[in-house]
Image 1 (cartoon, rainbow, N blue to C red):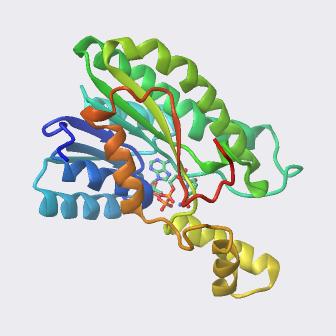
Image 2: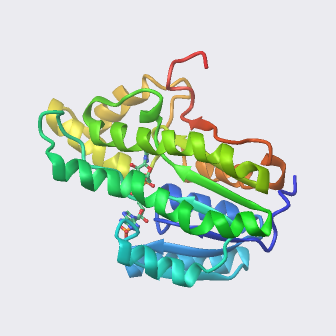
Length: 259
Ligand SMILES: NC(=O)c1ccc[n+]([C@@H]2O[C@H](COP(=O)([O-])OP(=O)(O)OC[C@H]3O[C@@H](n4cnc5c(N)ncnc54)[C@H](OP(=O)(O)O)[C@@H]3O)[C@@H](O)[C@H]2O)c1
C-alpha cells in the first residue's frame, strides 16, 4: 500500500535509537524526508547516515535536549515547516510513589507532557494553514494500565493524553490529525535497563526476569522498533486521515482490556 506521504517532511524527536528511530525508518521507507533529534551527536549522526544510505531520503539532524526550551528552539529552527511531527523523549525514572518530590514531577511533566504540548503548539498552526498534517505522540501503555514503578510516567503521559483528546478535535477540520501511540514492552535500551533493575531487585537473572515479564504477553515476545514504526507510519499516512484523537496500543495484547 502506498501511504501517500512521499516527499512530505517530518520532525522525529528522540530518534537516534529505539522507538523514535523505528518511526523515522518507517517514514523514510515511505519517502518522507526527515529532521532527526537526540542529545548524543554520535548515535544521531550514525542513525542519520544509515537512513540516508538505506532509503535515499534527505535527513537533517539536530543534537539537542528536546525537553528544554533552548533545545526545542534549536530543533524548531532547523525543522521549519514540517508536515509530520513525532514527539518523543526519554521516559522518567522508576521508583516508589513516596520517593518523588515536586522537582521530580516537574521534570517528568516537562519531558513527557509539556514538551509535546509545546511542539504541537509550535508546529500545528502551520500544518492547519497548509491544510494537512499528522502528529503522533509516543506515550506508553501506562496510560491505559498503570505501571506501579512508573508513577511519574503514569501521571505525565495521562496529562498529555487529556490535552490531545481535546485539541485533536479542534484541529481535525483543517486536515490535521493528532493521535497517541502507546508502546508496550519493546526491545530497546529502555526495556533492557528496566529488566536489569527488576532482576537485581528480585535477585534473579536477567533471562529469568525477561521470561517472567513475557509470560504476561499474548504474543510471547517483545515488540521491535520496526513493529512500532510501522504503526506510526500508518497513522501518518493519507489513509489515516479519519483517525483522530485515538490512543492506540502497540503491546502484543498485553493490556488485558475489552476496549
Ligand atoms: N521500550 C519500551 O518498551 C517502552 C514502553 C513504554 C514506553 N516507552 C517510552 O517510549 C519512549 C522511547 O523509548 P525507547 O525504548 O525508544 O528508549 P531508548 O531506546 O532509550 O531511546 C531513547 C531515544 O531518545 C533519545 N532521547 C532521550 N532523551 C532525550 C531528550 N531529552 N532529548 C532528545 N532526545 C532524547 C535518546 O538519545 P540520547 O540519549 O542521545 O538523547 C534515544 O535516541 C520513552 O519515553 C519510553 O519511556 C518505551
